Length: 117
Image 1 (cartoon, rainbow, N blue to C red):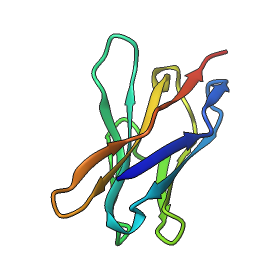
Image 2 (cartoon, one colour):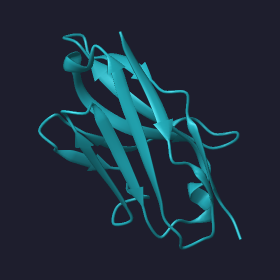
Image 3 (tube, one colour):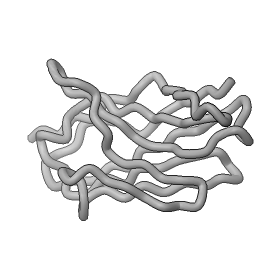
């Protein structure tokens, strides 16, 4: 079992920055890919960024050039640096970790990000 806890969300003005963190516990050694997803009110959950154990990254087109995902495998932690935030980035952000040979999905509880003046 893998447990994930996110932190770092909050209220920020357009153009501002936030850094999200997600700490894994439990069977950390079984984790392979990690990532961030988000869900805005009335919309489906969507991929923001993912990162492999070898730090290969993938980003949604809407965040390319503004967001950066990174991870610390020794600490079982994944980060999301968000710059040049826009109101349309407002959502609950969820940490995801795939574990084991079956790449089981594990989810955090989510952290709210609100971009507003």
